[in-house]
Image 1 (cartoon, rainbow, N blue to C red):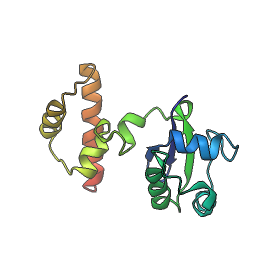
Image 2 (cartoon, rainbow, N blue to C red):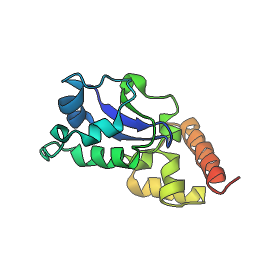
Image 3 (cartoon, rainbow, N blue to C red):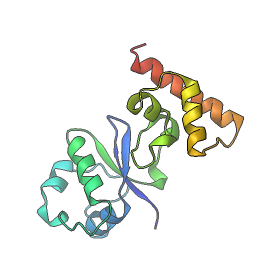
Image 4 (tube, one colour):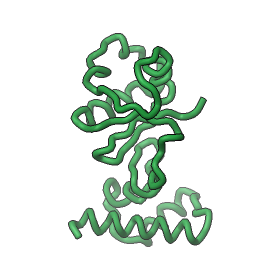
Amino acid sequence: MEPRYFACINCRVYVHALVWCYIKLEHPGVVRPGDVIDVDGILSDENLWHSHALPDERAVRKFLEAHKRHRVLFWSNAHLPNDLRLNWLTFDDPDSSPRFYVEVLKMTDWDNVVRWWEALGRRWASDEQRDEFRRAFEDHLDRFRGG
């Protein structure tokens, strides 16, 4: 099965939600990939919650609570935006986004990002990918500083 996500368009943040979403929402026909979701309706439906056997239930609920006044979409891989890797934030794999280094770790120096990646054993696929990541890091840093 293809991954599923909830994505907050306002904050450009997303969470992986495959198991819970499929069992509780997609399979019964409550939502389809690409739909804007009724966050309040989902949060208030007690039949959807408290299974605790589903591994992503807590993360999904926490995400929906945090973004309940925002525009939240239900995505499959077909709905992922082209700028996902550079401009969106997820806590499922936070190191994959330049925003993580700026907004969460509060890094202000590119060399610290490089050292972090090296400490994790990560490598960029190419010099072009590293340069693109650096430009995005610097753009997010500039916006974070109010520039």
